[in-house]
Length: 93
Image 1 (cartoon, rainbow, N blue to C red):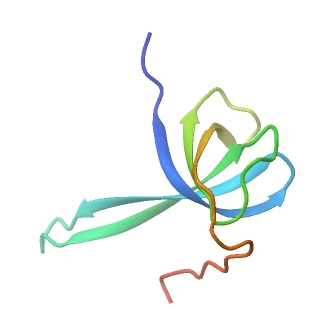
Image 2 (image 1 turned 90 degrees about the vertical axis):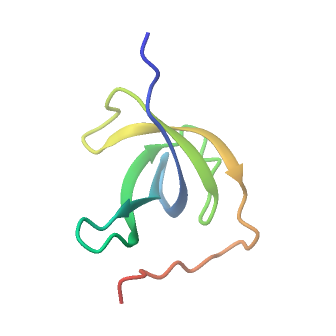
């Protein structure tokens, strides 16, 4: 049996019921200049018990599609947010 893809990211939205938006960061090398660049992807994640909240670091795993846009499930909460409300700004301003 193949091992399913798992990623670690930060919850950036918890406004929907049983759904979280998680931002996953990965580093890539620029093809010409060789500098390491941070790239981000956002995934909608199924959170059955609404355990995670804004700012939590979570581990997610690939699964069968739950809905049109959700193909990941929440596996565990790695680190709870230290502040109740964290305002995350987009870094590309």
